[in-house]
Image 1 (cartoon, rainbow, N blue to C red):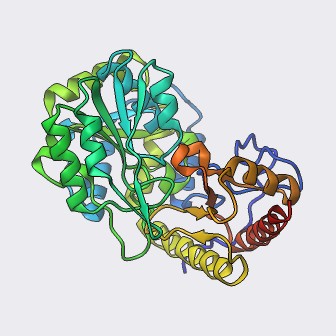
Image 2 (image 1 turned 180 degrees about the vertical axis):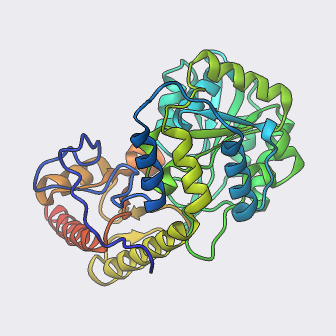
Image 3 (image 1 turned 135 degrees about the vertical axis):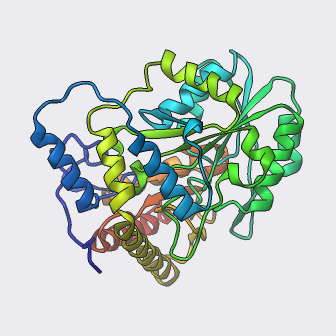
Length: 388
């Protein structure tokens, strides 16, 4: 490999949300990686810093070209420049879109278990969370289309937030499922907001399908949120892109993000994107291989050492979804026990909705020695929990 992902970087005392924990604790919870970003990105930011002037920034044509070329090359979809809008982040975009495209007390459909911030973006804006719980059978997730249609047909439902690929389960949705979602939402005049921030973090040889590429209907009724921030571990740079093909829908989104003042870049937001998408492809491919090897390490360890939990198979993200249904129906209690007794800080599945109450989420985007440490702690925590 050209790049080195085994390096353990000390992130303590860096104002890190993830690492603001006790000295004996190992955080494997929030979705940021413990790898330095691509050297090409670091170099670009260093060059920008050396300029020494940090005034207001603008979005150049090169920013649009970088996204267009990346998605065309890696994901087989062509964006038109006029479809695209800068935003300071995917979460900022989601919250703004919820405010602009829905009214108080209207319902927003989400498919649970799902990224917990979706709940915040809906509830904090006075809208109603409408859960379409995913089917979970034999360790595999799928969409419950009968229930989805019931939820979409409610006159108060005006928006659906899709997670593609799915977080926390790492599911890559197939084209047929995406087309079906599009058809149902079109039938009931519901807009689809597709969060695709994890799309580049697929296992080697696996590819996700952009919702807007699944069909013409999907393209027409959708808003897509994308970013390099998860992919290149630059979430703190605050940079994202919103893609909307339909001009009327795009105007409403544009008005929303401008009203909310989340449509202007900071001085590093553009440079990071250009470096990542123009020079970071090899780094990403090697990262994906490294994360996949970590997944295999976890799968083997759990299979050989922790018999009473199971790893849900996934094809995307660095977030592992652990089925603990054989030992608990209260993942908050389990996660708290593991942290208090071993120092391993992982996420309770209940944070992602009632459908996750028997699961834990574990972030393995870190050097393999930390993964090994985390697995030993997990084993000990599970073992002592059974004895409580």
